[in-house]
Length: 171
Image (cartoon, rainbow, N blue to C red; front, side, top):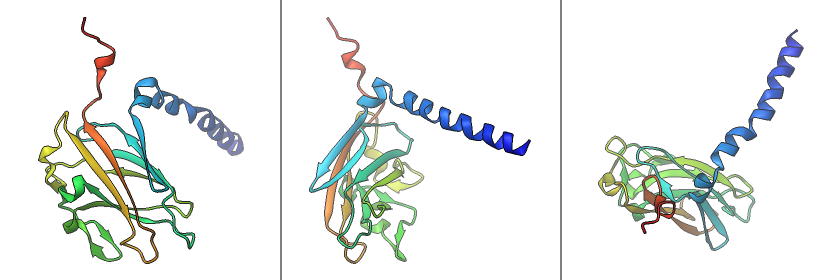
């Protein structure tokens, strides 16, 4: 009985997995994705960041000659936004340097991360992050871990739902 139950639990999960992806990959969501390439590294994420929601990003190429993944410091608007919570790596709090997150890439150079949307509860300098405003998310490697290769990529986001203008042309 348990074996049948376990098998039944395994089956639907494998079949259900593509369905949420299909919902995420509808044309509107697909148009909200962008990839930035810089010096052998990429960062992929949303064009439009919804106010208050985490900003999902991923990357490739963030690896070192010794086969380890890079340690990436993430800043908003070149460090203008500062986390009011500790952002630690290797025992050091980097929040004062404008680092809002630290991401460690996998040995193959890939990463996925959910970044905090800046607000009164987690940062200073968040006030400019209002609907319609555009911001830079800076990804930097080369200073937090010995042997890290220097890379940087800047991903630009606009706060809001996106631009429906193309769907409703004004005659």
